[in-house]
Image (cartoon, rainbow, N blue to C red):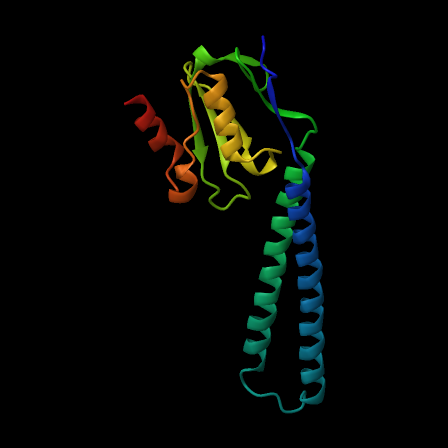
Amino acid sequence: MDVLSYPVLVNPAPAVDRWRIQRRRVVARSISMGISVLIWAVIWWFNRENLWAGFWWFLGISLGISGGLLVWSIVRMVLARRSVNALHEGLALGLGRDGIFLEGPVPWSAIRAFLVKPAGMGPSATLVVVSKAGTWRTVPLQLLDQTPAAVDNAVRALSGNRLGIDLAPIDRGISVERQLRLVVS
């Protein structure tokens, strides 16, 4: 099959940058938590004989918020690291006159639609390839070395203008299920 006329490669830089940012946030939150504990310890040390009634409440709320933010940052760092570990170098999506290559060759006649899933809370919008058999395959748009518009132009050109990628859901936040209903009808 001629599916590599237009290769779209994986660009790991955004995912690695996201992981580095999350790692820096964990370090910053840890330092902030340490400074908060130190300040509260100093306040307690100098006022331990006559603490005001709300001291322990303020201490608990302050350290609870700092601890919660630290835990949230750690969770986001772990998720970012998982996405970096799941990356592979090389071809993300191959496009050609005969079809696409996404985990194997798929002819144009077997593809129902190309949909875009908005990012939501994730790091990137996702390109969803729906086959006529009902299987779904996904590719994060942020990890591609081409812009979504360039991939759309290649899909339209190489499929003979039978298929295209509607990029409007990225701006409007339309769900994949609603897009599929619009395509089918």
